[in-house]
Image 1 (cartoon, one colour):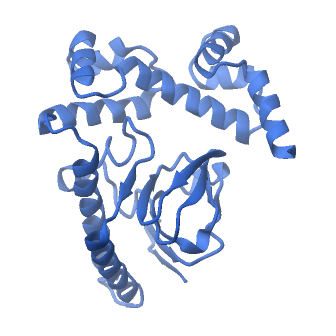
Image 2: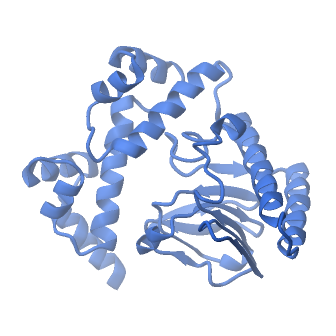
Amino acid sequence: MRYEYTDSGDAILRLSINETNIQRNFFQDRQTPLLSFAWNRGAEQTVYIDEVPIKLPAQSCLTLMVSQSFRFERPTDIVLWQYNKPFYCIVEHDVEVSCVGFLFYGTRGSMLIHFDDKEQESFGLLLRVFEEEFKQRDNIQGEMLRVLLKRLIIKLTRLAKDQYVNEVTTQPALDIIRQYSLMVENNYKKLHQVQDYANLMHKSPKTLSNLFALHQQPSPLQIITDRIVLEAKRLLTYTDKSSSEIAYELGFEEPTHFSRFFKKTAGQSPMEFKTMLKKHVHA
């Protein structure tokens, strides 16, 4: 079953249950960027995110960003919520849901949230309310669906904090980590140095490095590096752009600088990575 709500303002909310056509979300679909929650209600399966296989345990929920391509081993076991910025902007409503830079655009990438028996029942009830509301056709349907989505996000954020946030991490520290992660997501193509982000946040690079280390996060520089190389791999995988074109798109002044960066971080040159992909596809 697939439900969809749209309005004249380009807002989109989708809910897919036991659907085979959610098997793939293409890189090229970025013209309709959707944030996603994928709940696996069946046995453990594999999800391929940007063609990297990841185990998706039974009764777990995965967050998926607008920039990610994905496909599921058994899509009919998946409940998939998808929505775009016009429907609900998590940045503008961060005070309400506190998920930016954590559930989405965080240091962990896609976040895997586990459901125990109690949470399975709770999210099952919420899912049924979603289905009931999708069947309504009146002038407040959109607002009711936004309220339900907000509830879904808050419940997942609470669970994720219980499962992933260090006990010593204070809310102010978590907010700094979230702010930094979002800044990197928005600026990684043109700002490659920790100093750039420290200036924007009115903090010193050392202060940021110490805070991230204290709370067992990847270093600020590693977050920048990982985001750049991830985008480079996506562009090499899903487009026909040359290494030089990718270098300039990602903010490198010279293609040779990009090639050295990619070799150092990915362990192989862009050409070697592309060759490996072709062998994998034809294997």
